[in-house]
Image (cartoon, rainbow, N blue to C red; front, side, top):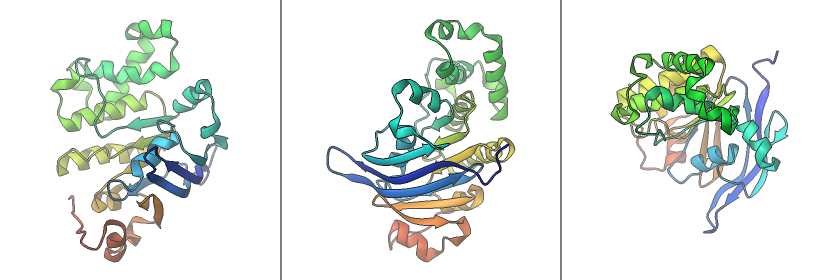
Length: 259
């Protein structure tokens, strides 16, 4: 059995240069241990989303390596990448749900990476997948909403459905790309609370980009900050002083609290 100090993900000299010549990531080096709740801080355009999307190759890195259990994700062929992505869940700011599908059906789609085309057609009748979907909806407090169409749910409920969908993959790492950016403060805290619960109770490693330092302090075990594509801070949430905050966000930045 692995210890909680084992490195699950190691990023070495990662660079991303877009065709527009924007150098979005500059020699980023980062090691993530199993069971950590890592918060990514930084201005819009600092490289947070690019970093998260390079980890599962939704965006192709320009150079460097991303080792998941010593296997370099950047070198995998599409078949092996598909297999590895099962272990790396992703939650998006925009939820990415299918509006006319029920909450439960949206959750079930998270299992498609494990199924052949033939089996995916009959997925809705699969007893094991149905039970797993109910169980994951229950984990995010939405079992009573399972028959509702996604388009009828609130923003917070949609994001919790997205979390349940990611859990269908049985991920070891969960990447959350500004999952609360479009939510009001109380709902944002609620969504973060579910992520924190999964981190603690199921030992799922979480890397989550945020703008709110108060949420980073409340839920993160570690904070990593990017500025202009470079890593400028890596430490404990309590170590981000007002001076450090201004270094990351600019001299005129003011911290906004979410209680």
